Length: 430
Image 1 (tube, rainbow, N blue to C red):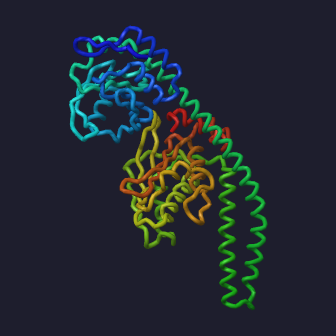
Image 2: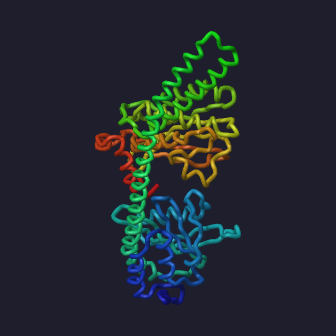
Image 3: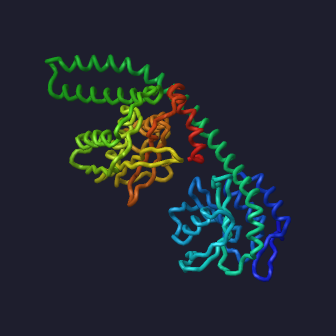
């Protein structure tokens, strides 16, 4: 779509047909990158324009193209250098199309004065995104361009809204497919675990009786103990399978999260797997609100996360547990973090760590994090895994203070899986 810009005595302006051309081209876009490519092509960049920006406020990510053509890796707002971040924030907060001046650092590390023609895209009061034209020239934009882009902002906002809806719909469908697959795996696991438990109980009883035989020597008693220990381990795995396959509906009561955290950390400090080798610290925000939750399920979540941290190899020296109030999309809640300074989890594995039977430990069942995810979905919360600052692993989860909706509880545990897609959509496909 060439020729949609015209150069005046002191800058660039749009030809009239560019408005309809760009608005109609947005119809076929399916994500932010396609939207940016479409805008870059439609605006037919000149050398005066350094970059084209699109900021996604839901994901807090800046998409960019050099001269509107060459894509740059999407960057979180938190990773932008201060000058660029300030321009993005100012562009999003502007009441309408505006020219902003600032200073950014270029690819060579040199500071440069820039101008940003910011186009905030809104539906009512809701910010959908911000399109930005970045230039190092003081006379890059004709005054008329501001007016023309203001006229274009409404169809642009409509295009962005359609793109975001399409992304969310794909997220919902993917989440529902994952939920159905998990339910199928869960049913299979339940059937296997149920068949295993009865023979296990019989073997455990028989070996226990055998261990009481006075004719056994010391070596035989040691073998009995080993067998009982291994049978106990298999029994715990079967119990995990059943918990994963058939989670209970939950018993929700107001709970002081700090007391729950203190109890679990005290138990972890005394656990033989951590005693004397791992230092636990807590950082709990004062005056946390009470949270309506199932204390047994969240205690198990905390225990699994703490035990995962302790059992990392090589073993970490420090594990910290943090809690703070956090409002997410207007809903009050509490965010809890469990961090360790161990070896961390490879990036390629992180996305799969909440899938059933995925583990980095030789003797792990791969159900701890999957169970934690199930429990938090039942609470209408979420859980995420990332690299801890300075190395190691950080697992963060969030719980709403008012607990799950009554409709979700009435639907039983499986309703949490079905709600997963809706929650992902409301968070922009987290």
